[in-house]
Amino acid sequence: MAKATGSYEQNVFLNCPFDGQYKPLFEAAVFAVQLAGFKPRCALEASNAGQIRLEKIMDIISDCQYGIHDISRTELNAKGLPRFNMPLELGLDLGCRRYGRGQVKDKRLLVLDRRRHRYQQFISDIAGQDIESHANSRKQFIRCIRDWLSTESGAATIPGGPYIYARYRAFERFLPALCERMRLSPEELTFGDLSRLVRIWLEENET
Image (cartoon, rainbow, N blue to C red; front, side, top):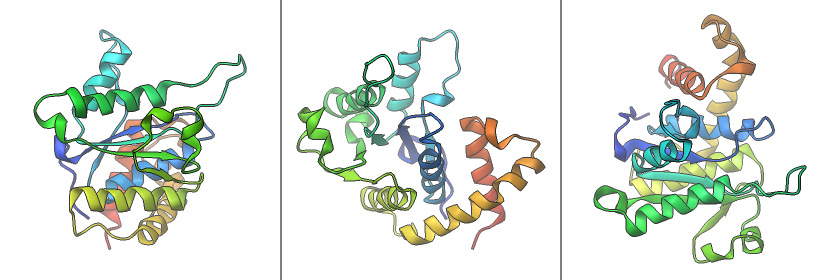
């Protein structure tokens, strides 16, 4: 496993839902990115109260060469309104690549949906992007992330998807004990907590 440095070339922006239903996919993504030797970043790490949320997100996006965008959750809520945060953040990342200067023009993006061509019904303007399907499966999600990072980074040391998934399931089983050791509640982990626990587990269980 490569060691993530947190530099622009190692940072991966995760644009996805943060609710309880999506949590298993999110945790799988954080694990896969770290095992591959990269550093996951997302809007949940933004805590500067003196900066508006959109500015925080744009700062994080500009710090990341890689962006993983899951647009699978745009359904109407109880008030009949759609969820547009994920398409908005995808648009910001696409804009960096098209209009940005310097290193952000070399951004690499992975766009995912639960079905490959479903996006055509609600965001057809991104036709031409290579949309991948995770089918709401953690195993498939991990495979998509692994194959994309391996291809786009040119890294020859990233293990295959089945291996990463098996390691993730082992981490998942050990997580309650690790939380107890670190005096954390599994139900109340912050993004920073989760990232740190993944890093600790990987360092203690290298194979």
